[in-house]
Length: 129
Image 1 (cartoon, rainbow, N blue to C red):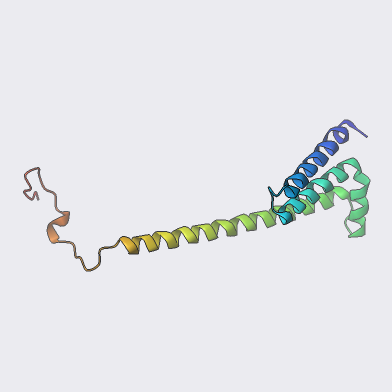
Image 2 (cartoon, helix red, strand yellow):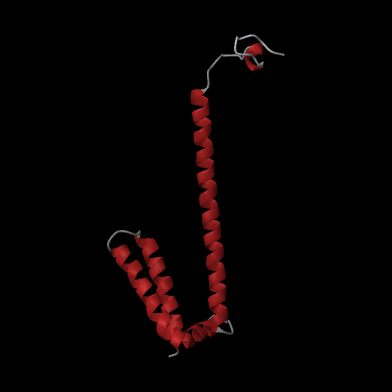
């Protein structure tokens, strides 16, 4: 085991256990907690036993374990990007709808602006053209 493996495998395992602990205490939703636990646990396993990633890669038809890890990271990144984009759009649409409802609720029905309403005036109330 090299220095990188000795430092980062236990660190990833510790982070995985922390997510598991948060999930079991109810601080994190079960699905999210399990997902993070699996991600960090797999990271710890791949760092501690790099040949396992190579074996898994060859099972699915990929040449190297590092390629498998890269492909998975790209796919997860794309998934997260789409998730956050759709969440952002949903939030944006909700805010737009709320602003629209608020504007309609505050509108004065039936009032028409007078022609002099937008003209400038001095302090005495006299219209200035």
